[in-house]
Image (tube, rainbow, N blue to C red; front, side):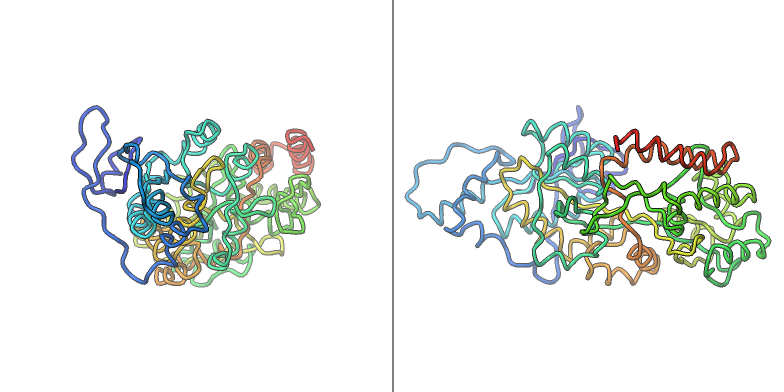
Length: 460
């Protein structure tokens, strides 16, 4: 039996899951119907693995089943039969958000039928998962698997609540940027399922051609006669996530990388010569009015949708509003301002395995051979509208031009740093950019002050 437990339930979730009417008092809903995934067969099943006499340790996987169980009577069955019985009574607890729950319900059903291992899906508010996971896992009360964002990883690893996941041959099934994002200190800690990044939205009526670089974009914007040559959200406190592609084009990443390509928090690179050049550029763009702290996310979206600019740097979340406004859209790479590629940050979502799980074999099998497959990742894409991390699923999703365009830009992006020290960077980074853009501070002095504040905060 598949158990689906909803810890929090909001109206929008009622549209996503089939269930009996809710009882009063916050009682959990009952799943009314579960459909099995159709299509090509899944990768090799786990029933043979879990029942194998060579893996008798799997008998220790048994946890409390969804509906509880009574003590087993004495049995004269063979060791293989006993191992299979133990597997069938085991339960994987998986934390998932409301949007992904219906898809995982289908995958869990298929997994249980193949392996005999039940899956208890607990639907949680995504914004609270990291905090709850950090609090519960050390006590043994957390899940076996949780959904999460890749930039949580350094914090999760340093707190000892996750363990490496052996992707094996399946590593090649995923986009490299997604595998890199879900890695820490040279080890893979999860199975990615989606990517997300910025790109350049272009109103083709106002700008028929994609700009080759930043200067060409500004020129095209001015020639269009629109109020704003281009739009990007900045706000009074800055927005380094949206401005990072331009910073990267000046050769000023946040951190350097080690021999394995992993971020090295001891090497704060944004304070280098490229960073100072970028700071000077920010000041110039502020003086010219191309960057404005008065433009926040809502204003940027509103002005683009109303036709007041031919260009908007944003994510896929604003595409629908532009299309509904009747704008003919193109989605392009972000143009370089500093001469090097303007690489956006790529955010990756995936699944992590608890360091306290007693079901490591089953958890790994469920992630790599079920959630990691083309079929499941295609279903996750359909409910989340984010480019799949699985290569085959992404190729199939390219029928959607928006997904194809954002995904192709993301393939050339860089993972948002997942090291814990990134928290100190965010604290000082945006406000420094806002001060420079608004002309409140000398660009070089303010940028150097920011780098010094970050280094002091992370103890480097």
